[in-house]
Length: 348
Image 1 (spheres, rainbow, N blue to C red):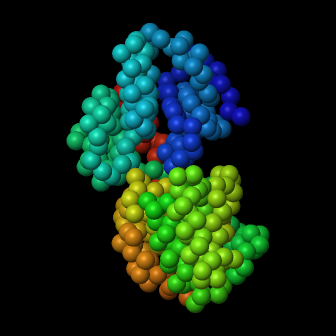
Image 2: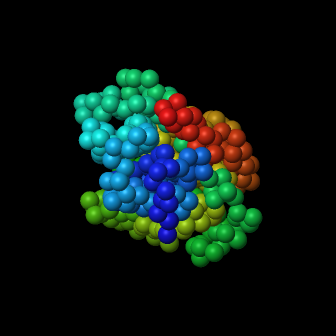
Image 3: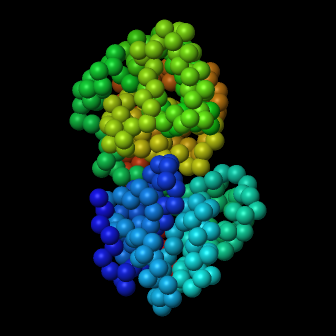
């Protein structure tokens, strides 16, 4: 378990995570926070604390009231911005930072909260365009040591016990927004023609999406592919990382997305990538070089883009190697942390 922050007097940054359910925002926060903790005295406040950064309890937060030295409060959600604003009004010496990945027009309350921030970070130029104020664009990064190709991908896949020689995957909560149905429809069309492949849909099925997930399962069973299109349900993060190393191809099928961290996780693991033009796909992917871009929600386009890679796994392997090089060069976790640190330094 992470340790509690040793010295509140030396604390410089508070990283709040005020959301109990594990989400994509939580995942990005957990990855970069320990890197920031190497650059600043930082503490994590909230659930799902990662290793590498001390934890701040509510009692610790109370002891920081009316401290003279300013503290960075780096929010990633509306509720975290609200808490930061209220704390500052009440006497906590906070400099407020907000990271926005959303690619949509914001509600009035979000716009007001953004106006109260001392600095804004956007994860892409498109996200920045919706903010109505100046923002520093800092793409998400990924730990290229954890998300890395296996020494033997065939052996890694064989450990799964699933049929075939290769895997194609799609990760994320099972729901329409993530394009889970688009992936399943494409696999129903492609797998009968490519017997060496098994498809894996890795992600939680929340209660409100159970009917949607059950319809996907009925569709899979109707075409006789229940053994070759697997919906894993929610997995521990270590098991998700293991699945990236088992894949040859990754399909990013979101209809809309903030950033889409799985894009760079899959690329870092050396997966060939076919991605819908959602989230940061057009920022991250060099179309035809480090991946292939397709329109969101278009099953036929996804099938057409995936089939050449499934027909020639060596082509997929070469694309995955180029994708890995791009992430290491442009989207590493250290690069993200250093850019965020520069924003902090301007404030304190």
